[in-house]
Amino acid sequence: MSRIGKLPVEIPSGVTITVDGDVIKVTGPKGELSEKILPEVTVSSEDNSFIVKRKSDEKLAKSQHGLMRALIQNMVTGVTSGFEKKLEVSGVGFKVALQGNKLVLNLGFSHPIEYEAPAGVNVAVDKMNIIVSGINKQQVGQVAADIRKFKKPEPYKGKGIKYETEYVLRKAGKTGAK
Image (cartoon, rainbow, N blue to C red; front, side, top):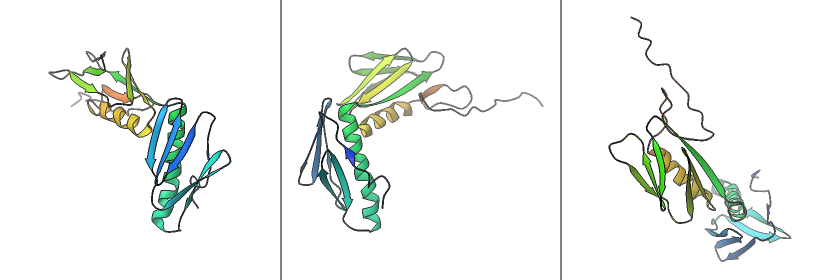
């Protein structure tokens, strides 16, 4: 049995979970999220929690068991506290600004890069830090990855966009000895 799948999803106060056919909806103080229930699992409510059970012991059912429980837990966490990813921009001459809802990045290219985040994801700028936040964990992670993709950190000087918790392994440059 899946170690993650067998754990119940606790429902905090202020959050309601409804199941309509094969769609589960989670509503909370920050918004509403919905997800399609995977075909190999069933979702049931017990007391103040939700339990995910698999229909069989096949490999697909086992993999979907833990996944569905994690998706429901992420929806509950998203509508209560939300998710946040922090990115750091480092490099001489690099600039980050927010113009309306567009993120404008000057990363040493011949032109500035303009990025508009999708609906439901907020982007904030604090000096050389970019803060991506929202209620959908997958969307927040994807937007952060898209922004990082513009200029990945390079191993010699560490210039580029990196996650706050990311460690860039630095390489030694040329020694100049013959």
